[in-house]
Each structure stands twice: as structure tokens, then as C-alpha cells.
Length: 531
Image (tube, rainbow, N blue to C red; front, side):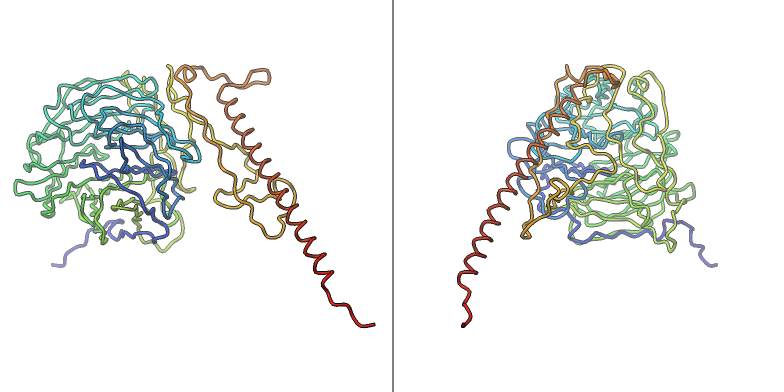
């Protein structure tokens, strides 16, 4: 009897590393011994934990900033000990949280154009752990809700807008927590712990709904994540130190739905799950490959698809949200693979002949708009993510400040250094300024005019300023402090440009004098004809 090949639109997915000129080179990736991804990415920025002397730091790069990264490139360096985990806020592409060995969680806001100088002052520092903080996770649907887990066996859920803890789970784990994951709408948590137990927790009720002891018998760290339909996918080690994956139904934790043994490597398998396609990617620390599987409701439930293999081992991995992918090329996933000294993007693609938008590959996906506020979630409300269509290309976050009914410490996000209308012409960064647009004078003698030095981004305001209520602008209302700051920044930039124009005018005048002198000398030295 002929074997029937299982149909899957993801059966031919293949991975491909980008060209070398599209990588991020000369980055000193952190050597800290912690099983974290060491990277986080969104449609605007790439953040990587790096080596730092005298504290902890991570670098934030615009996605277009490829090539060699200068050693003097500014970093986010407010922690006093190594950074262990970072994650971008899903509802604001300029907000990132970090956890460190200094027992603190810090929330940062990155300026619109990225970092132009080291960022040392966070918007808010969250202090509640007594040992190092190794896990950071934002709530998928509620604004300003952030989870942190530390080696003190605590899980703390914060309202970042007020800087206060909403929930502290201090009696559910007896040993170090290896991983924490929200479910699709953020109503439940699943955790993996050193005691070899997988737990499903209702954080607002403070109760354990289900738990499975010895889900994986090995002593190495394990991981657990929710799938969209409420199942739990885990990775771990067997008693013989073989790496395993398993799929569980929390309603019946007695036996796994699926269990597979992979190999005998000792690197921890980090799972990355795509809710839209039900595809799970496994990236082992120290491996040089990425395995991917499709989860279905047909036996054996977890179906192997393929493996992407490269030469260099990976020290960490960033996973791009779906709204940051290039749908015109049928790109269903993109990883940012960390090597010892660089970051290499890896693209996962479904081959299709048609150039039309592929509805079956790209259903509506979670967008940057939160479904509710932190106080609503704390009061017991649940909501699925607000979906957006990818038909018109990827969706960038609007970069709005995270807001809440009470005082909001994230209300002090630095404004963009330049604000123009849609039709305004702005010189591109890293290119010579077109002086014709500024002074209506053409360039002379082929001299390229260097770009201006960008002014420093305005500092974050104090909580007192952040607490001020935003008043809608009217014709008679006075400008807000943030508008005043933006105006001062633009005025400073105008002064810089004027100084630059004056310098160029002076240079042009000097060159014209030199040219005139050369013309006179040439005229005097020309031989005269015979009479």
C-alpha cells in the first residue's frame, strides 16, 4: 500500500541566511552563563545583550543599521550587574524591559531615531526581587503589564505605568524557575521549574490549576510554552540526557499527547511559537541548526518539517513578530542568530509562484494596539489580541506612550528630534545634506557637505512631570512641557544648520578667492604672440 504524504502548506518551508552585508558585525555578545535568548527584535529595532565592564548593558540598533558596528556605539547601560534578559513591549516599539543580576527590572524608552548617546536613566526601575532576575515577559494584550521571575523563586507582575506590583506569586515554586509563558489572551501562565514540574497557574486567583511532576526526567533545564488552542509544548531532557519535546493537554496531565527524542546534545532547546501557523521552531544554544515542527490535531500531533543548518553555533536568538515580516516574499518567520561577534538574520520562506498576497499564509495577526488597560486586566477582564491585516505590508507601532488611568511613568518618552509633514523633504541620515534645499544655493566645486551632528535627545523627565495630565491643544491653550522640549530641540537643530551653512559659505568664498587668484596668475604667465 502506497504511503500517503500528509498535506501541509508548510512542508516546503526553507531557511536561508542573508548576505554578509546585511549582517550586524563586530558585536561583543554577552558571555554570561544564563539560558536566555540574549536578543529581542521588533519591526524597528534590534536589541542584543553585550559584554560590558563594570555593569550590564545591551545595544539597540535600527534594523537598517547593518554592517560593522563601531565599538563606541552607544548602549543602554543602567544596570550595575550583567543583563540576563530583555524583551520589547508588544504595544510600543520604543519601550524595552530588562532584567539583571543586580535584582532589578528596568524599563527604557528608546528615541525615535535610536540611540545617539548612552542611555543610563530608565523610565522606571522596578525593585522587588532579592536575587537576580532572569525572565522578562510582557502581557500579550494588556497595556503596561510586565512579568518578571527571579532566582528567588518569585513571579512578580507589575503595572509599569505606575511602577507598582499588581501580583506577587511567592509560594508556588520551591526552586529556580526556568521559563514562564503567557497563554494567548494572557489569562494563564505555564512555568517550568528546576523541580521538574510543569505548572499551569491562574495569576489573578493565585492558584495552580494543573501540574505535572517529572514531565522530563533529566536534570538539565526545561522550557514550556502555550499553544493557541491551550495545549502545552515542552522541551527538556530524558534520564539518559537525550533532548526531548512533548505536547501536553493540561486537562489531562497524566500522559503526553506526543513525545519525541531528538539527539544527545547538551544545549537547552529554546522554543519559538508562531500562533498564526502553529509552527514551533526549536533553537538549541550551542547548536548550528534550527528545527521546525507543525502542531496539528492529527496523530502524531507534532510533525517534523525541516531543519535549517549553518556552520556557526548560535549563542542566542531573536524572533521577529509577524507584523515585521516581508509578506511579499512569503516570509513566515525571521530569526536574528547571535554568533560570538555578530548577528546574522535567517529568513524562513514558503515557496510560492504567485506574487499575490497569500491569505492562507498570513491570516490576521496580533497588532501593536493593546486590547485593555492594566487595571482592567487586574480586575479580572480578559481579551484576545487586537488583530490587524498584513495585506498592505508590515505594520509598525505608532510609537505612542503607554498610558493608564493613574499616573504613568512612561509618559515621558522623548519626542522625535524632527517632526515634518508627509510632503516635507528631509535629508536622509548618513548622506550629505542637500544644501540646495536649505539655502537655495547649489553646491560648488564638487565639495560634499557633511551631515550635521545630531543634537542630543532630550532627557527623560521626572515622575512629577510624567504625572501631569495631558491637555488637548487648542488655540488659546499654553504649550505642554513636552511640546516646549520638542520646540527647543528643533531650535537647536536650526542653529546647528545655520552655523553649518555659514561655515560652508565661508569655505566657498575662500575657494572662490583661490580660484580667482589662480586665474590671474594664469593670465599673467600666458605667452604673448609675435607682433
